[in-house]
Image (cartoon, rainbow, N blue to C red; front, side, top):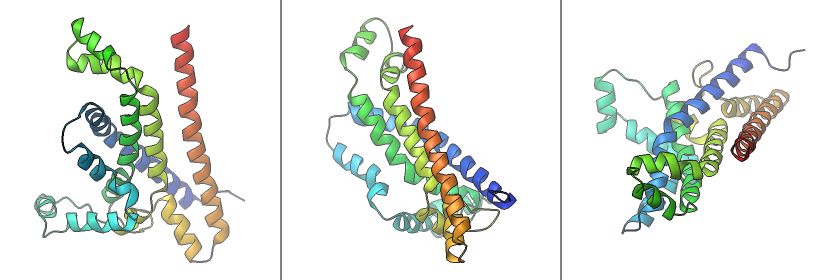
Length: 228
């Protein structure tokens, strides 16, 4: 007996693609936002931090409702997308949007803590040696903060793997189109196939474990290379 059916394999692959793509989409803006928050000391910083962290404390279904409202045709963004024939709601793009929004704060918070731990004198010294601000960032600050950035990236990917509430509202639970692992687990449980739901739960656990273990392995390997 196969552990996973053909349909379930497709669901797993679709979930992995969406989680990886959403993590890739948010990586650069989240790292830049974290760097900016770590450096900025002026007014309004706490407001920005709070706004960026809202998806962590709001119910995912509330985030889904807000995204639906934002994408409604009567809203500027929804009207702009509709005028160009771009459909988002109840498509894979909605899955991507929901997972990206829900995982973005985790990456920002983790990376910000890593940037705050970097001695500010080191990039300042690089600037005195002729590095521009971006050069100092990529050659000094980012390498020193890599562990936190990597940890945040893994957390964001893992969060995207398990996203449910916002996704089900914005993308629906459409077989073969928008159904992810979390949605499939819910569906199988609702129709009374608890055995299949448990199999999918096991797959989710394995994927999350593999992501965390890989990040730790890469970090240890890089540390050994730098020490050599």
